[in-house]
Length: 257
Image (tube, rainbow, N blue to C red):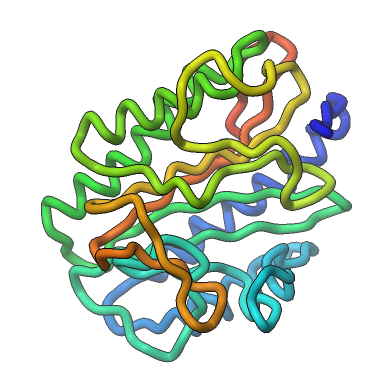
């Protein structure tokens, strides 16, 4: 069932999303060669808890043997998503995707960014930019009355037009009172399919794109997902709401006071 949220509920979701965005911005500012993802995750959790919220990812149960052990996913180079933080130091020239969410006052926020570590190559810069550009292209079509697959189709069209592939095995999702709700939001597909978008729908739209094949593998820990050819991947995600005027509102971009 696809939830349609009231204005009051979306105001609550927005609070969670704003905290998610600020947490990402804070941890992103700490990225530098030599820092460990274990340290970044500890800082992320502290930031979230210091602001009265709960890390949404920590302890989540999936198909893996153990619950997810961290407050954020830290995915380096060929890791697409769900990278588990370690004591290994980040290296100059790597890219790192950070995906996190918070639970605040009964509502969830979710967002991801991929960051450069030190100086990165032009090819990696272009990959990161394309992941972000694909998000913005997709939500041009996230309007009341449109079919959801219009978003998916235009993400795929932009990504493949630049010579990259779109991950098929992983998708975005509805969000609100639960971290993952209906509907699924693929980053590929034909237009004119799926549910019709309505004011009050809240979606996590998250292009995951690869330099090489779209195929992915799950490592032995049951969480870490990597590109099958071990070429780099980038991830960009925001939570959006379809507003009363029918246009998308980006909830996980920090609002200026």
